[in-house]
Image (cartoon, rainbow, N blue to C red):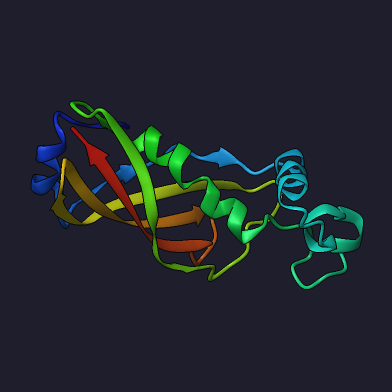
Length: 151
């Protein structure tokens, strides 16, 4: 389900509230391989499924930064912001990868608005993100990211 924010000023009403979860997204070997090509990180635990079967995770896993890189696209599936000229990813305050994302698993992201501050020309919104793997006991990634939205 997508939450619509009618204007960037309406973010103040969302501070401290969970706004929802993305739909489940498959994590395929093709996606992992493309990320490996884009980042030049071809470690065997990511790109060699046969070798990875005997590795520490029992199979190939997605890169942690691949998981984190899905934040903007998944955020756009959870949140629609009206009344802005543009928005930018301003950075991350904290990122952790408590458990792996096995290739072939499904991943979703939960979003909470942790804080909202006025900045010149707009607002700065801090989100707490939790990336979950279906049926896994722990999150794959927890991150606090910062976006700015301008009028």
